[in-house]
Amino acid sequence: MATRSIIAIKINSTKVKFVYCHWDGYPQHNGKILLNHYNDFLKINELIEHGGISSLGESVNAPSDVSHSFDKPVENVTVFYGRERGDKNSHHTEVKTVKALDKFFEHWGTEWVYYYDYSKCKWFFKHYKSKEYKELTSKDCEE
Image (cartoon, rainbow, N blue to C red; front, side, top):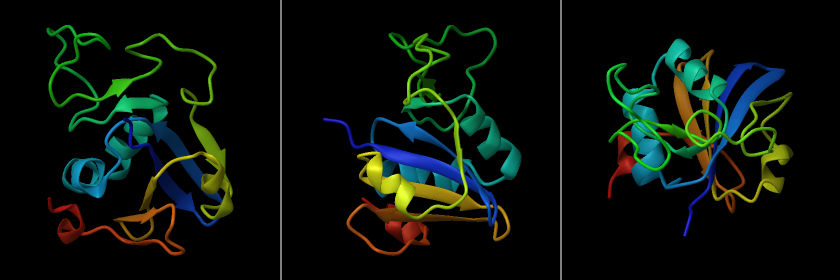
């Protein structure tokens, strides 16, 4: 069973870009990968610009000499719905832009939301049952 999540980047107080991620949204998996491997704006933006994610990996791209696909993914490389699976024009494949983080995410049916606050250079997260976001730390990502 999937543990769905939203991965977002807060550009400023009125612009948030995000994508859907289908697998392993728990802090012990997606949270840990985001915290340890996506810590600068350019890399996070590159991740989000590829659109909806089937499974998050430590890298956005496979080495150029290696074949990476939905059916045969390279270990630790992100699998995207559009790029690897060829899915187009679905709410799971598109990059979305919204004005605020609050109520919008409640309607996506995801268990977890992660967002990188560009102004603070930090990841924040919350479970759908939580009322407030908190800073993501390595302690949150422990097994």
